[in-house]
Amino acid sequence: MTPKRIIIMGAAGRDFHNFNQVYRDRPQYKVVAITATQIPDIFGRKYPSVLAGHLYPEGIPIVEESELKFWIQKEKVNEVVFAYSDVSHEEVMHKASLALSCGADFKILGPNATMLQSQKPIVSVTAVRTGCGKSAASRKVARILKEQGNKVVVIRHPMPYGDLASQACQRFATVQDLALQNCTIEEMEEYEPHLQAGLVVYAGVDYEKILRQAEKEADVIVWDGGNNDFPFIRPNIEIVLVDPHRPNHELRYHPGECNFLRAQVILMSKMDSADAGKLEILGKNIARYNPGAKIVKANLGISVEDAHKVQGKRVLVVEDGPTLTHGEMGFGAGILAAKKYGASEIVDPKPFLVGQIAETFAKYPVIRDLLPAMGYSGKQVKDLEETINRTPCDTVLIATPVDLRRVCKISHETCRVTYELEETGSPDLKEVLVDWKSNA
Image (tube, rainbow, N blue to C red; front, side, top):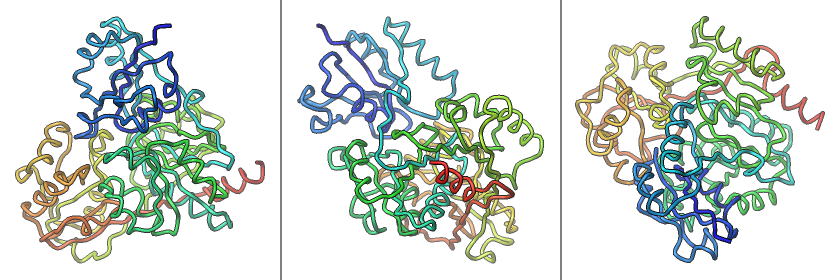
């Protein structure tokens, strides 16, 4: 039988997982290429043979998504499989139309085809968009489970931006492990807060191997989602964050709407900074499309370490990168902190951008008056550092989950912003988790 020829469209994450789960070691399929987007410097590599399996002794080429039409035609592709997240429904259909116009089928693999089954209870924390406050929620969920006497292990959605073979199954137990495994800023932002709380974090490429290793040392596993993707492991309870700053996005983005419709618990974060009209829209959407979900309401409590460095000062705000880029948020915790603590001016960094940071602003022109902490490579980190130091300000307000001062040499005065999830009313996350365990 002639194998079905396939291209997987990805962004160095779900694409690899989907291949591993559905196509690896199956001779009826031939994956001829994986495309890459969203993340810089991913294309030009290969998904290595040690991960791809014996049917791919040369590995699988990773190419630019802009070359999709060329590769469909060159390789006589039968099917294009879409496998990345935080994309509008309209944009997904534009990709589909391109594939269809070349004669190929277009497919999206769902939870039943791609979710692993665990021997341990799984609590998943996902979102309808990047930047909903998912990291703070994951930390809170893990802390509650730990306080209940459980050995908690976190499995994080993949961010394999380095040597894929060596990143197949990564275990992090200390902050020092981040440097030993050459983590990017994006990885450190997600892993470090868990490590500081005394938790073990697993991540990587081969999630079957990751899950089986994590099960050996866990009573409960927390799936800490990335972007707005659905989990790689079948959850026993699904907690999904929505964002009252972006009402209706829960219905307009893939696969965030899938999460929204599947949610057993909907967590409305940022209640304290959202306006009443947007909250009303979000509430109506929940009542219409997922009326059976439990609703937890929460603020995102923001504080700074040295308020006097902000009050009356000209501040450069550095925010979480993905939240501002493909997450399309106009602002984050740093802007809110600058206003809360009385900054005299929020300095616009655009006249002082260099290198790949300037390229980021060109690709995402909606970014205004703040700086995304992009750090997918050493070159990008250096460009970020130079941009920060070139920007005239009194204080750099660091609103990233990782302390940038550890990876960038900043010549200005600095001040860190921290934020924690603070539930309001009942039920809160503890009540939800106690109820779940009692009924498990």
